[in-house]
Length: 212
Image (cartoon, rainbow, N blue to C red; front, side):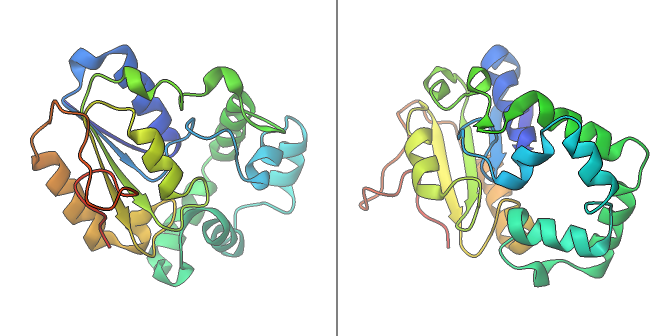
């Protein structure tokens, strides 16, 4: 089957693909996958501190439209004007579900320290071991890691392609939904390549091309 993940979902997808390559036809990673960069935004590092995170989520970080916009602006999108009122309303109700915030902060406690991503969970130096075709879709304004360094790490994978989406953040489909949909369909339809990626005439761009 095909496997696709974003952010922490990207980390889980990478880990599964490394452990069970025989089950994966193709891996799609949308936005910077967690675990490829030890640097993590300070906001999330603080929310990964047990005890302090519960105080924060019960006071200043309680679910609200204002807080949802703030998180998206700082971490997830290039322009919050791309978020519809309906999307924000769904996000607020999701945040109000029992156990939602506890599950989120518990996850952060297990993967982060105050310094960033836990070293024992780092996958950035293990990408060469991937035996499955990997396709990346990465926003130019992803705050977790920029495309240039993401591309350099991706080049260790035997069969990879890397698309960069202009004016898009960590969740690029929220900024550029049509372009991301086109890329996903294109990547699912393309044929796996046994060679070591592809390189354009521009040495800074790996994969078929840079998408803008």
